[in-house]
Length: 348
Image 1 (cartoon, rainbow, N blue to C red):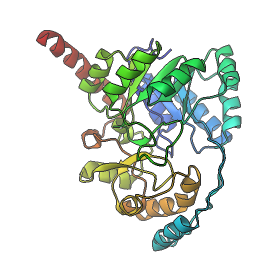
Image 2 (cartoon, helix red, strand yellow):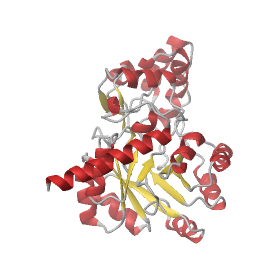
Image 3 (cartoon, rainbow, N blue to C red):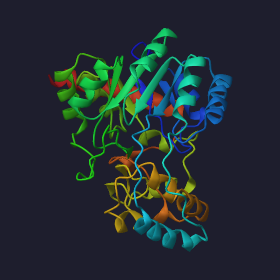
Image 4 (cartoon, one colour):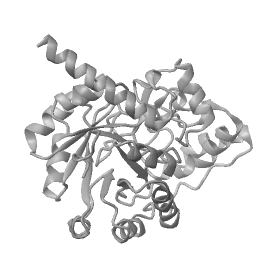
């Protein structure tokens, strides 16, 4: 399905409201491939978004699911005090640092019932029984991986494609097991290196993700053997994206560095460096507990236009993101990729 699209470009699923039905539909209608992000949504909310995309376009699109990790009970009282102090600046309270499964079982049933043609998984792998049921309804299964070991596990679990995520990517790293001793939760590979080590391990089609904002980046990963390039940050500032105005402004200003942090969610994620991120570099590896704990603070900060307490997820190359309609961005990326490939051919 993905490899057969007219344009080998994918709009990455971006949870938290960024991947709207309008953005997903616009990308697919332009000949590329759009994704809805099911993370943090209830099954009913996801069903409404699926219906929203289908009301706009008949082109295929995908849905991404977060795989819940093992339930762990942790003492987060110290971190809760930090969050309470920060949230109080905008009259908010800390949330409950509770574990949840992100409504995963219900959303799995939904994507099967809706016959979503491509279903991707992040933070781990679905059970083989789920993979088999998705295959039975004609769906392709994509596993998001960061290392050759994860790639091998995904291949053994029956995945059809691998989304290989480089350390340049904005938002959450897709590591299966978050190692608290490592800032990135696991080994950090740049995207081209990650593609190479995964290709040496398994023989599955690869989608390349991480730091891609220009058509020349797309050309580079296609030349490296990927069947498609997945871009997230590049679509953050598209007209159809649900990105908050404050985050859009910070991306446009292009004054902040990016860094990997657990401060907001308890899982390694790359975002713009702000006060809360800088003050909480020692945040514990506790997802989704920290995500639920900081959610009211982040929401209040967003409403107040305060970038210092928001999770401003963005990739390393965010300063080159272009505020365009999604279809126009797809067109430009395609033309830039063609030009880059032609130039490379001439040089060789």
